[in-house]
Image (cartoon, rainbow over all chains, first blue to last red; front, side, top):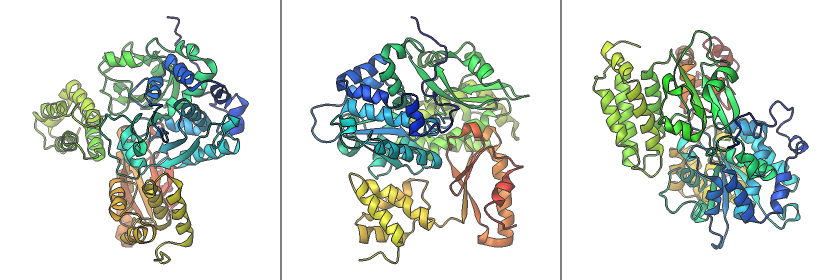
Length: 424
Length: 162
């Protein structure tokens, strides 16, 4: 195998550096050299290199990036678009924010290389509305890249044109879904679209479009500079490379950690994060954003942080958002927050999601207000069971998965709350 | 027709710029609404009317964006809207107590100053700063690690009303 799970700084190379966001800082450590290298490569070779690296989409779905790029048909006339999904909204996730804060040029360089690979002439970075400072930093990076000749017409004399603009969302979780994002960018409600056709064939304004997550793009310059083999040597065989994990909750050092995939969960929690806050114990953990099924301390024993290991426990790595639930948090409260959130964010297009999230929020609200019945726990599980795989996008599944896991693994606590009839 | 009475000259320039910035005029709807709200505080019916009559933006298309996205205010908010996150991590780290405190503060101000109370609470999904939980946004400023002990001081920076 020869894979290493030692720490490597790829995405966080600029951590702790003064003026880390500035173009000059980025270039002082070889920034934009990957771009020059990529411009000397045929597009097909760039795609092949990314394919070989095993880089998978870091937004949550984990789809192989190079493969996604290869789906763009080269024989369709007209423009192709490249979009960065920087609409980080999955509760618990705050790792893309860190890239904007640390090295926005890494994202910009990754996007230009991707644009060259798929033949896109126009790109957008779509950022969630509430990231006010981050948006400013990204816009500054774009301006700097234009001034340095890395964006615009005939980039570095290559004859390749690529324009990049920034677009600000307006407070809708659903726009993190790639086709919802495209709808939003078209100036419409952020409603996801039925696939197929996939965006690679018919995306923004009906043109071939690739949408990748911020972290995915940011990994590209390193892969081009160091080669697919070097990237593949990090992490595990099936989950190569490093991943940003955003970890939060009642722990001593919450934050963003860049770790090789396959890193030990216990090591992250107890060594890197310094363990739990004094007097708190871990009751459970949500390993990949609010939609990931919750894991018990028993299930977390010996867990490694990679796509396969977490899937084997019945949950998912998702966006790499780890939330440590401590003993002071009631599962009734947790379930209520999750149910309310998805109900609020359902776009309303598909009945199983619109009605299902409504049912979950209603039943959970009743339980929370001490008007619940013991059978409600079972009822929630049954409603959730019928919400998966029946809708245009995965929001319905995202609401159903944590509900099924919480009602199954912590059903007794919720039933106890209902029986007691008083505040938890 | 002129929109002289609806938008300031500066805002007119901004709107015009946004309308030609993207591939289609429609793509500009979100940025145009952001620009209006940034200057006027909210988006009202007369704005939609002017966008239609002066710039040819479809009323229905504008309205569906305005009503779908939570970032737009369809009624005039008080001077300092407070967005409070009560999602998973913020909730674990004490957001509910903070919200209660803020609401108490506002209630007190309302009793004395009525609708001039300056603040109002607006719910918001996860703000993406869970490592700094609980988080709130006042106007466009994000405040981290808010507690029942420091929230009064934060609010006092925005309004001297007691």
